[in-house]
Length: 192
Image 1 (cartoon, one colour):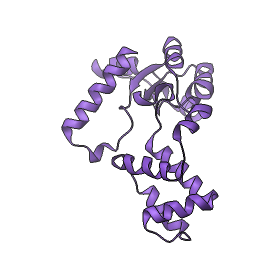
Image 2 (cartoon, rainbow, N blue to C red):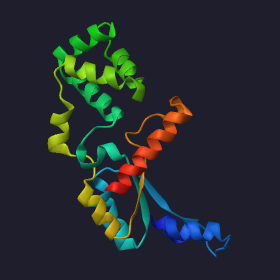
Image 3 (tube, rainbow, N blue to C red):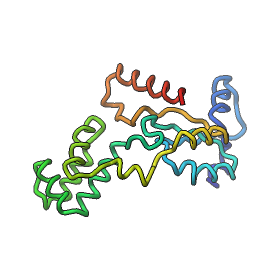
């Protein structure tokens, strides 16, 4: 932050839009901070630091994750890998499901890491297979921002935008679905 603030001028997304839209020149290079995914640490750790330094930022949230109603597929995979590493029973079940040797932890980990958003049904099926409930993780940990935290951040001057419904890998989605997902995410974020 020290380096950025020494060599660049922080601007809000609205200021940046005006500068670009009006083709204005500036005396110092500009920067605008953005954060994706809407994790709760944006409210509890990041925002206070930025406020002290008077640095504006934009936060792009995944609307299905607000209030901890769902979990990003990558986090689900990470939790499955944790079970794979720490629990022999889970390792055996997962190895059978994946058709791999239960001693090939490295290979199973690589296979799990290769899964993407389109594999959500398989990820959820593997969790059920090893009797792991993602809801039981979400309840105590609550990794995402709540609606109240988001409103509070907006009231404190942070810009909030949509980062899709649930963070799919957009490269793998056809144009019509991309458009639909963006529109639905935007409508949900406008409603709340």
